[in-house]
Image (cartoon, rainbow over the protein chains, first blue to last red):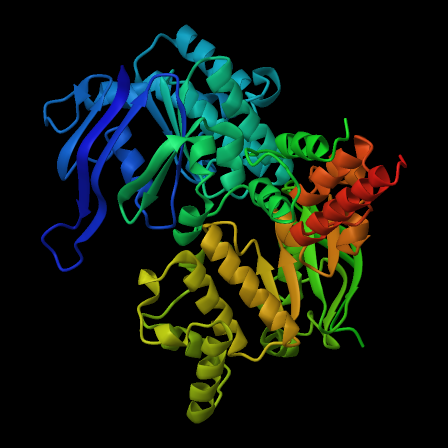
Length: 285
Length: 289
């Protein structure tokens, strides 16, 4: 059953003013529990606006959004329940750290749920471990003494400590160094693969989308223009290029090898797949 | 005389307090006129601190930074230094000040006291150089991220600088925006501007003529991209990775394919693999192995 279900979802900012802007328009989309979906699209295509409906930060101007069966268009709907089940990690979330220690920062959400102190602590420590930070080492430190990548992970732990069923990530690796990026993305892969979290990833990086997601949704000017399995979407290179997007670098590289007459499989999304496809095409194994 | 000459530069934040942090720890570098240098390094390696020394936004705790012969610690020379070296930062929304594109670009030369006629000419040529003339009367906040960064670059070009420093200027942009900024930078470099390009994106660093990798406030590697990206293990130890194409080439070499070293671009890679396939076909036709 779909966990997130949008139908004819439209959001207009500053409606009935001269600044009125249609951010998303007539979006119909279902996301099932256990999926790993990437949302891609040029700047201003409505990606962030769309996902802010998933945890009830925005209310539809028209159309409906149902999350875990709760209809968010209904003013009496239980928005708090939706925010507990869908955790949203904003862009540059490290700017939102504020407590004196890492453990207190991660405990903030569960504490506000009114959970008993022992459970708050358990959840916070568990969430820190899930993002690769040992609570015994990092728990007592000030968040502001950490590296950029570590701060980002503390922010992610704060969202995980709420035990969400869906994790929505808005450019989670932007601005991290290569090691921080690899580690951060590896943790989200595990949260999906090992813990079964549903993940919605907004990214500008086609390589990231290709390496992580099984399904890709493409937005352009507020509308869903493509939606399908990752391999199928990145097989549509010309359409993506017309939108100012692209395909993973190795997918492009393999296409060029084919254009030079090399019988390389076209179905290549990652560096590992490219290596194997080229070896095979050259008969080098 | 090199355009930028850095000798034994140390920078300590909060020097003399218990919170003192050594950000740069003995950097010596020369950047020649017309070079295109990429600076890479993990978070906290000192890249942005170094960048801010290039136009006197920060001053050395120890050592010297000379720009076109001017010592950045010389207070009387600060504006001359800043006129020579312009900076573009990460967030396109924090750098534009005016409500109309051409006024934004005019802001710098106005502050330099450039005469009005000359300002008009400079704004026109700067917007032309970043291919944004068609937007001269637009409101900056309605532009795309890539367009905003190009306007920010134009604002610097209008000061007629010798060197452009970009500090993760493409990090927040979508693929089209990145491509726009990279094309603009390549074009300005071809026109003689010295470029210092700070980035976490190894693919972008590979486009420079020279790559400098920092670790803990020191220069760890300094050479052509071919030389630096041949040292995969050392890069990994710095928290960095190979760009995708050299990484794929390396994987294939480890699998036994005789691919040459120093392959950086998709074009070079495709040529090398096609040559290998042709060679193999020729050998098998002639009964060789």
